[in-house]
Length: 262
Ligand code: CIR
Image (cartoon, rainbow, N blue to C red; front, top):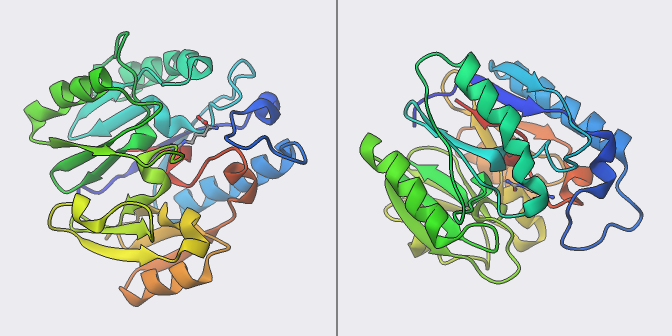
Protein backbone atom coordinates (compact mmCIF):
# COMPACT_ATOMS: atom_id res chain seq x y z
CA UNK A 1 0.00 0.00 0.00
CA UNK A 2 1.53 3.32 -0.93
CA UNK A 3 1.79 5.67 1.95
CA UNK A 4 -0.63 8.61 1.98
CA UNK A 5 0.86 11.98 2.79
CA UNK A 6 -2.24 14.14 2.42
CA UNK A 7 -5.86 14.13 3.55
CA UNK A 8 -8.83 16.11 2.26
CA UNK A 9 -11.66 16.66 4.72
CA UNK A 10 -14.86 18.70 4.62
CA UNK A 11 -16.39 20.58 7.51
CA UNK A 12 -19.57 19.60 9.33
CA UNK A 13 -22.37 21.84 8.09
CA UNK A 14 -25.04 23.61 10.14
CA UNK A 15 -27.47 21.35 8.25
CA UNK A 16 -25.79 18.16 9.56
CA UNK A 17 -28.87 17.47 11.68
CA UNK A 18 -30.60 16.58 8.37
CA UNK A 19 -27.96 14.02 7.38
CA UNK A 20 -29.20 10.71 6.00
CA UNK A 21 -29.56 7.98 8.60
CA UNK A 22 -30.88 4.43 8.35
CA UNK A 23 -32.53 4.83 11.74
CA UNK A 24 -33.95 8.31 12.37
CA UNK A 25 -31.77 9.72 15.18
CA UNK A 26 -33.56 10.20 18.49
CA UNK A 27 -32.72 12.68 19.94
CA UNK A 28 -31.84 14.69 16.82
CA UNK A 29 -28.21 14.83 15.72
CA UNK A 30 -26.08 17.20 17.79
CA UNK A 31 -24.21 19.37 15.28
CA UNK A 32 -21.85 20.80 17.89
CA UNK A 33 -20.82 17.35 19.12
CA UNK A 34 -20.35 16.10 15.55
CA UNK A 35 -18.16 19.13 14.87
CA UNK A 36 -16.07 18.49 17.98
CA UNK A 37 -15.57 14.85 16.96
CA UNK A 38 -14.70 15.90 13.42
CA UNK A 39 -12.16 18.40 14.77
CA UNK A 40 -10.57 15.72 16.96
CA UNK A 41 -10.37 13.45 13.91
CA UNK A 42 -8.60 16.15 11.91
CA UNK A 43 -6.16 16.67 14.80
CA UNK A 44 -5.44 12.94 14.81
CA UNK A 45 -4.72 13.01 11.06
CA UNK A 46 -2.28 15.86 11.64
CA UNK A 47 -0.73 14.05 14.61
CA UNK A 48 0.07 11.02 12.44
CA UNK A 49 1.83 13.27 9.96
CA UNK A 50 -0.72 13.94 7.22
CA UNK A 51 -1.01 17.33 5.55
CA UNK A 52 -4.70 18.14 5.78
CA UNK A 53 -6.70 20.33 3.42
CA UNK A 54 -10.23 21.24 4.54
CA UNK A 55 -12.95 22.02 2.02
CA UNK A 56 -15.62 24.32 3.47
CA UNK A 57 -18.91 22.92 4.72
CA UNK A 58 -21.90 23.62 2.50
CA UNK A 59 -25.33 23.79 4.14
CA UNK A 60 -26.96 22.51 0.93
CA UNK A 61 -25.31 19.16 1.64
CA UNK A 62 -25.87 17.82 5.17
CA UNK A 63 -23.77 14.70 4.48
CA UNK A 64 -20.80 16.41 2.81
CA UNK A 65 -18.45 15.83 5.77
CA UNK A 66 -18.53 12.17 4.68
CA UNK A 67 -16.24 13.15 1.83
CA UNK A 68 -14.92 9.64 1.23
CA UNK A 69 -18.05 8.83 -0.75
CA UNK A 70 -17.30 11.46 -3.40
CA UNK A 71 -14.03 10.10 -4.82
CA UNK A 72 -11.72 7.12 -5.05
CA UNK A 73 -8.03 7.96 -5.27
CA UNK A 74 -5.23 5.49 -5.94
CA UNK A 75 -2.04 5.23 -7.99
CA UNK A 76 -2.21 8.77 -9.33
CA UNK A 77 -5.83 8.41 -10.48
CA UNK A 78 -8.95 9.93 -8.95
CA UNK A 79 -12.46 8.88 -9.89
CA UNK A 80 -14.98 11.43 -8.69
CA UNK A 81 -18.11 9.42 -8.02
CA UNK A 82 -21.80 9.89 -8.58
CA UNK A 83 -23.07 9.11 -5.07
CA UNK A 84 -25.99 6.73 -4.84
CA UNK A 85 -28.13 9.02 -2.68
CA UNK A 86 -29.60 11.78 -4.91
CA UNK A 87 -29.30 14.34 -2.08
CA UNK A 88 -25.52 13.80 -2.12
CA UNK A 89 -24.82 14.09 -5.82
CA UNK A 90 -24.15 17.84 -5.66
CA UNK A 91 -21.34 17.27 -3.15
CA UNK A 92 -18.94 16.23 -5.88
CA UNK A 93 -18.57 19.60 -7.64
CA UNK A 94 -16.29 21.10 -4.98
CA UNK A 95 -14.30 17.88 -4.72
CA UNK A 96 -13.82 17.66 -8.49
CA UNK A 97 -12.66 21.28 -8.63
CA UNK A 98 -10.20 20.76 -5.79
CA UNK A 99 -8.74 17.57 -7.22
CA UNK A 100 -8.36 19.18 -10.67
CA UNK A 101 -6.86 22.43 -9.44
CA UNK A 102 -4.83 21.55 -6.39
CA UNK A 103 -3.15 18.23 -7.07
CA UNK A 104 -0.54 18.40 -9.78
CA UNK A 105 -0.26 15.34 -11.98
CA UNK A 106 -3.40 13.61 -10.69
CA UNK A 107 -5.50 12.10 -13.49
CA UNK A 108 -9.10 12.96 -12.59
CA UNK A 109 -12.12 11.19 -14.04
CA UNK A 110 -15.82 11.85 -13.45
CA UNK A 111 -18.76 9.43 -13.42
CA UNK A 112 -21.95 9.82 -15.45
CA UNK A 113 -25.51 8.52 -15.04
CA UNK A 114 -26.73 5.86 -14.74
CA UNK A 115 -23.60 4.85 -12.81
CA UNK A 116 -23.63 5.35 -9.06
CA UNK A 117 -20.90 4.55 -6.59
CA UNK A 118 -20.01 5.61 -3.04
CA UNK A 119 -16.36 5.67 -2.04
CA UNK A 120 -17.37 3.92 1.17
CA UNK A 121 -18.01 0.83 -0.94
CA UNK A 122 -14.39 0.74 -2.15
CA UNK A 123 -11.72 -1.08 -0.18
CA UNK A 124 -8.21 -1.30 -1.56
CA UNK A 125 -6.01 -4.11 -0.27
CA UNK A 126 -2.74 -4.32 -2.16
CA UNK A 127 -3.50 -4.47 -5.87
CA UNK A 128 -7.15 -5.42 -5.39
CA UNK A 129 -9.97 -2.93 -5.19
CA UNK A 130 -12.95 -4.63 -3.57
CA UNK A 131 -16.25 -2.89 -4.26
CA UNK A 132 -19.54 -3.44 -2.50
CA UNK A 133 -22.58 -3.86 -4.72
CA UNK A 134 -24.97 -1.99 -2.46
CA UNK A 135 -28.03 0.23 -2.39
CA UNK A 136 -25.61 3.06 -3.29
CA UNK A 137 -23.28 1.38 -5.81
CA UNK A 138 -24.64 -0.20 -9.00
CA UNK A 139 -23.13 -2.35 -11.74
CA UNK A 140 -22.48 0.63 -14.01
CA UNK A 141 -20.57 2.30 -11.17
CA UNK A 142 -18.52 -0.85 -10.66
CA UNK A 143 -17.76 -0.99 -14.40
CA UNK A 144 -16.63 2.66 -14.32
CA UNK A 145 -14.38 1.88 -11.37
CA UNK A 146 -12.79 -0.94 -13.34
CA UNK A 147 -12.29 1.28 -16.38
CA UNK A 148 -10.57 3.93 -14.25
CA UNK A 149 -8.32 1.73 -12.15
CA UNK A 150 -7.74 -1.37 -14.31
CA UNK A 151 -5.19 0.50 -16.44
CA UNK A 152 -3.10 1.30 -13.32
CA UNK A 153 -3.02 -2.33 -12.28
CA UNK A 154 -5.84 -2.56 -9.75
CA UNK A 155 -8.12 -5.56 -10.05
CA UNK A 156 -11.72 -4.66 -9.21
CA UNK A 157 -13.48 -7.39 -7.20
CA UNK A 158 -17.25 -6.93 -6.64
CA UNK A 159 -18.64 -8.03 -3.27
CA UNK A 160 -22.36 -8.55 -2.63
CA UNK A 161 -23.35 -6.88 0.62
CA UNK A 162 -25.88 -8.30 3.08
CA UNK A 163 -29.15 -6.36 3.30
CA UNK A 164 -28.91 -3.52 5.75
CA UNK A 165 -25.17 -2.92 5.33
CA UNK A 166 -24.76 0.61 3.99
CA UNK A 167 -21.25 0.31 2.54
CA UNK A 168 -18.56 -2.35 2.21
CA UNK A 169 -16.36 -0.38 4.59
CA UNK A 170 -19.16 -0.24 7.15
CA UNK A 171 -17.99 -3.74 8.09
CA UNK A 172 -14.29 -3.87 7.16
CA UNK A 173 -11.20 -1.83 6.36
CA UNK A 174 -7.58 -2.36 5.36
CA UNK A 175 -4.78 -2.49 7.91
CA UNK A 176 -2.04 -3.10 5.34
CA UNK A 177 -1.51 -4.48 1.84
CA UNK A 178 -2.15 -7.95 3.21
CA UNK A 179 -4.44 -7.55 6.19
CA UNK A 180 -7.94 -6.35 6.98
CA UNK A 181 -10.25 -5.86 9.92
CA UNK A 182 -13.66 -7.49 9.52
CA UNK A 183 -16.70 -7.28 11.78
CA UNK A 184 -17.62 -10.74 12.97
CA UNK A 185 -20.78 -12.24 11.45
CA UNK A 186 -21.00 -9.88 8.46
CA UNK A 187 -19.07 -11.08 5.39
CA UNK A 188 -17.30 -14.41 4.92
CA UNK A 189 -13.55 -13.87 5.35
CA UNK A 190 -12.89 -15.84 2.14
CA UNK A 191 -14.46 -13.05 0.10
CA UNK A 192 -11.04 -11.42 0.43
CA UNK A 193 -8.30 -13.15 -1.52
CA UNK A 194 -5.11 -14.10 0.34
CA UNK A 195 -5.45 -11.61 3.19
CA UNK A 196 -5.00 -12.00 6.91
CA UNK A 197 -8.24 -11.13 8.71
CA UNK A 198 -8.48 -9.74 12.21
CA UNK A 199 -12.03 -10.17 13.46
CA UNK A 200 -13.76 -7.36 15.30
CA UNK A 201 -16.25 -8.58 17.91
CA UNK A 202 -19.89 -8.03 16.95
CA UNK A 203 -20.41 -5.76 19.97
CA UNK A 204 -17.82 -3.37 18.50
CA UNK A 205 -18.72 -3.89 14.82
CA UNK A 206 -18.45 -0.17 14.05
CA UNK A 207 -14.74 -0.31 14.97
CA UNK A 208 -13.97 -2.50 11.94
CA UNK A 209 -13.65 0.80 10.11
CA UNK A 210 -10.25 2.35 10.84
CA UNK A 211 -7.85 4.78 9.16
CA UNK A 212 -4.23 3.70 8.76
CA UNK A 213 -1.52 6.32 8.22
CA UNK A 214 1.77 7.49 9.63
CA UNK A 215 5.29 7.38 8.23
CA UNK A 216 5.45 3.59 8.44
CA UNK A 217 1.70 2.94 8.14
CA UNK A 218 1.61 1.67 11.71
CA UNK A 219 -0.61 4.43 13.13
CA UNK A 220 -4.28 3.50 13.25
CA UNK A 221 -7.20 5.77 14.10
CA UNK A 222 -9.72 3.57 15.89
CA UNK A 223 -13.11 4.34 17.38
CA UNK A 224 -12.63 5.45 20.98
CA UNK A 225 -15.31 3.19 22.45
CA UNK A 226 -13.92 -0.11 21.20
CA UNK A 227 -11.39 -1.43 23.75
CA UNK A 228 -11.37 -5.03 22.47
CA UNK A 229 -10.68 -3.96 18.91
CA UNK A 230 -8.02 -1.49 20.03
CA UNK A 231 -6.26 -4.28 21.94
CA UNK A 232 -6.41 -6.65 18.95
CA UNK A 233 -4.94 -4.03 16.65
CA UNK A 234 -2.21 -3.09 19.14
CA UNK A 235 -1.31 -6.76 19.55
CA UNK A 236 -0.38 -6.76 15.85
CA UNK A 237 2.19 -4.01 16.44
CA UNK A 238 0.13 -0.98 15.43
CA UNK A 239 -0.05 2.27 17.40
CA UNK A 240 -3.68 2.97 18.26
CA UNK A 241 -5.10 6.51 18.20
CA UNK A 242 -8.62 6.51 19.71
CA UNK A 243 -11.06 8.96 18.11
CA UNK A 244 -14.63 9.58 19.27
CA UNK A 245 -17.20 8.76 16.59
CA UNK A 246 -20.49 8.42 18.46
CA UNK A 247 -22.37 11.35 16.87
CA UNK A 248 -21.03 10.76 13.36
CA UNK A 249 -22.09 7.15 13.72
CA UNK A 250 -25.67 8.19 14.41
CA UNK A 251 -25.61 9.48 10.80
CA UNK A 252 -24.15 6.12 9.67
CA UNK A 253 -20.63 7.57 9.38
CA UNK A 254 -17.35 6.01 10.45
CA UNK A 255 -13.69 6.99 10.36
CA UNK A 256 -12.71 6.43 6.73
CA UNK A 257 -15.80 8.34 5.57
CA UNK A 258 -14.39 11.61 6.87
CA UNK A 259 -11.37 11.90 4.59
CA UNK A 260 -9.86 11.24 1.21
CA UNK A 261 -6.24 10.14 1.59
CA UNK A 262 -3.59 10.33 -1.10
C1 CIR B 1 -25.06 8.63 4.11
O1 CIR B 1 -26.03 7.92 4.39
O2 CIR B 1 -24.67 8.77 2.96
C2 CIR B 1 -24.33 9.33 5.24
N1 CIR B 1 -25.25 9.70 6.24
C3 CIR B 1 -23.26 8.43 5.82
C4 CIR B 1 -22.19 8.11 4.84
C5 CIR B 1 -21.09 7.33 5.44
N2 CIR B 1 -20.05 7.18 4.51
C6 CIR B 1 -19.18 6.19 4.50
O3 CIR B 1 -19.29 5.29 5.29
N3 CIR B 1 -18.25 6.18 3.57
